[in-house]
Every structure is written in C-alpha cells, then in structure tokens.
Image 1 (cartoon, rainbow, N blue to C red):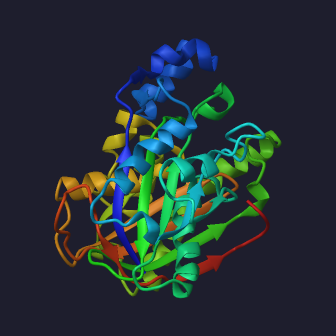
Image 2 (cartoon, rainbow, N blue to C red):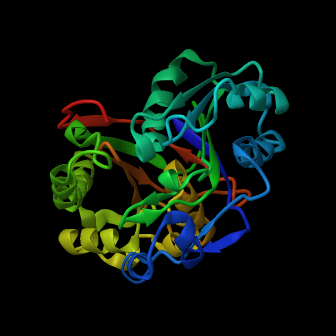
Length: 336
C-alpha cells in the first residue's frame, strides 16, 4: 500500500486564543494556561465557508492535479471526530462527489476513534486495496468546522482549529515505506469528557505512560529502537503533553514536530498529515530515515505508524509514500 500524494488547506484567517475568551467561556487564568503552559497561541478559521467549502478546498487540489485521474478514485473515506458534524438531512459527501466529478466513488465515514480516525483509515484502506485494479486509488479526507464552543475546546487541554487534508492511497508508488501501525484502545475512557471526575483523573494519569507504551511497542514491533527514529510527527493537542512524552521516553523534544501547535491549534484528524507535509517541505528527513506518525483520539485510542522515508521527487506538496501495513491491537476493552 502506498500513500501517493498529500494535499492540505490551512485557512489564512488567524484568531488569537485570547480573542476566544468570551466565546469559549474562559477567564484570564485559563487563557494563560493554554498560552503559557500548553503553547497554544492561535487557531485558524475558514470564516467564509461551511464544511463543504473547507473540504472542497483540498478536493479542488485533488481533481485539478494532472497526475490524478478522478475516475481512478474508487473510495472516499471521510475521517472526522465530531460524530454529527452536519445537520440532517444534509448529505455533504454526496454533494461533494457531484461537485468534483466523483459520483462513481463509494464514500463513507470513520469517526469512532475520534482524532485517531485518520491513521485508522490507513488500515481500512489496506483492506480495500486488494479488491481494486492496479491504477485505482482510495482518498482519505479530513477536516471539520468548529461550529460550537462545545467542539472547539477541550477544557484545560487544547483549542481546536479548522483545516483539511486529503491523502491519496494506491497499490503502487514511491516515497516512504509504512513499516507498521500499532493501535491501542482503552474503552473505559469512552466518556472521559462527560463522565465522573474520577474517570477524568484516571485518564490524565494514564495518558502519558500509555501513549509512551504505544510508541515503544510500535517501534519494537518494527524491529527498531527509539534511537532509530529521526522524527515523531504528532497531533497538535498541546506542547506540554509532548514535553512529558519526550522526558519519559528520553527522546529529544526538538525531534518531535510541534511547530504547528502554536500556529494552527489542534485540527482534529488532520494534524499528522499536515505536520508530515511540513516536515517534508522543510527537508528535515533524509532517505532511509525512520519516523513516526502519532495521534490520540479521545475514547481513548493511541495510534502510532512507523514509516521509513525513501525520498520524494516532484512537487514539494505532492508527497509520495509506499509500503505495507501491519497492525497490532493491544488492550481493547470496549468501544471508543
């Protein structure tokens, strides 16, 4: 399986965290925690459009790319965290298919793993690809609107931003080899934000150690050590949590790509793909180096993809990744 190209859209409109105080019901002390401790300075918002417009920004790039034949896209997997992110009876995916000439594609959503759904989609794509022709593709689509304070703020943790990404997956390609994926689901925390204070405390206590365990397990299953990993490409939940991970793993913080935390905030399922694109654009990886895609979805699912970079040619924003997929499920206690 190969990730043949990645596209992303980051809105230009910047909203400083402090300007969201009234909307999110934050006092000055809570804002300072987000800014000074968690490293969240601002988020992006696509104020001129709705969800269809946000997703359409990357779909436009896909169908206008001369190297991509729209009729080769047989499946569209839309990954999102907010389970109901457009009102009934609207059918956003069906409308997008008609608008961008993708009516022939089968479209469905992944949402159960919340912000980890984007990486889980790679496993789903891997199971679908053998049934396709050699030149057929699967498109993984991410992006959500922060239409309510309820979905824009995780208290004392992060502020959500708006962005979208599209990932083209096929049976052949060049780039980085997918060495494996480890996903750990702890279903007892499925209601962590709406459950009892005790559940929240337990989640906060296990978050860093269990995330580190998932990272180590993924690396070991690939026959590697952390010393072999050039970069960790994470989700943008906040800076403080990644500092704790770096300390616990004795891994250099400067090799955990956190630059976008303060620039765009936590953009749901899109973070790892946007951050990977940034690392490749900045040429921070050399051929044959290993790196990790890491994300966490409330519920809670820890997902880690081990990848090996093989070099990418052509347009700097058209990244090509190839390889095979190996998944390990550990500690599954129920639905996320």
